[in-house]
Image 1 (cartoon, helix red, strand yellow):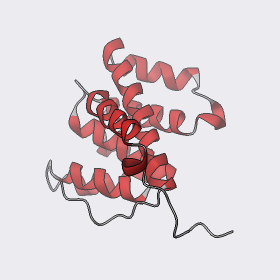
Image 2 (cartoon, rainbow, N blue to C red; image 1 turned 30 degrees about the vertical axis):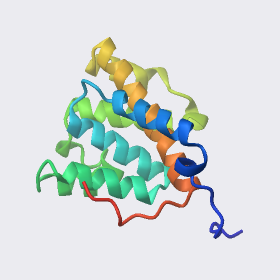
Image 3 (cartoon, rainbow, N blue to C red; image 1 turned 120 degrees about the vertical axis):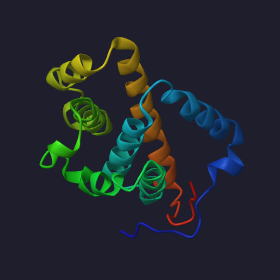
Length: 154
């Protein structure tokens, strides 16, 4: 089965109220979280969901924080094997990101949730969960609409 088509609706144009609500949700979803951590979460969820546009965009955004980030971005798909490059809090966030993104596999296991609950206070954990849910919505927009990478400028 082919995965491409020339006819894809643009939600920004055809469902502008919905799209604007997503922008607002995105704006508040990471309030109070470390920006580097937030971008790592966005990149990892985008990778899992196969959204090239979102992966490109958030990788470029994270690179704005400095050249040292390139190695961490490159190792993100294998972060468990390269855990020395990530803080304990980042590892907890990445593990929760994977569980929520792949929610149909194991739901969100108690042990994964507990690690995140130990790494974040309740308010930041709520923000992290909100961010993960929001980026998963965006990746579905990107993949469904076949948004192409390479055009985004931070």
